[in-house]
Image (tube, rainbow, N blue to C red; front, side, top):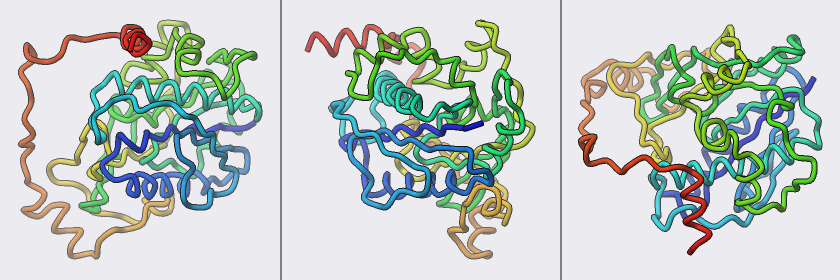
Length: 298
């Protein structure tokens, strides 16, 4: 019984600091490699091989996909981000086929996962999959965290689904183009591969009832400057506790006094002053299909 973790790595052009991107990835892979069961494999898909040695049972798949946006930085807009992510996850699924996994979990390249996920899936064969409704959000900048009751709404590292559910075409290889990948996985490219907010409902509408994972399976990592969503941990937070390292491999980033100050002191009361456009000024919703068609016409 094998669990495949698949991690898409953003294009170097669409990052504020690619060294930071690789540092975040290194921590994510270290978290994955702490699994208490050997029945797992980790697959990273990206445009540039990491500059650090990969942990055990981790494989890198190189792609030459172009930047999804001409903008330099992580905040590229929804569709460019979805396009890049979903096609890289598609390549990851193709690569995972060689390992014949029973389950697949998409893990974002900055998040942390619980050390018992592989052991849990091994102990529960033949299940329809799991959704991480309960999980944690962590800010390394503040060394604080919070509990979230609907993690799957805000974090991409929140679903474990049987590999067979994705119907990976046998003829497709890791050298496929983005258009070929998007076409092969068109039924769920935008809602499942590129997005996560309504993936639980998407699977349910098709007869697959994902069960709530009975423990916090992942940590959503924010406040590091490379979130395409710009997410933050706002308001008072819980000061760092040792279970974060025990279960997820998260080491403290501050001393005790500094952590308390940033968690519950005046620094924690910072309001959200990010400007937001009124709904009538926001870009009209578009589809991944039209975005892909636009790329091909360029």
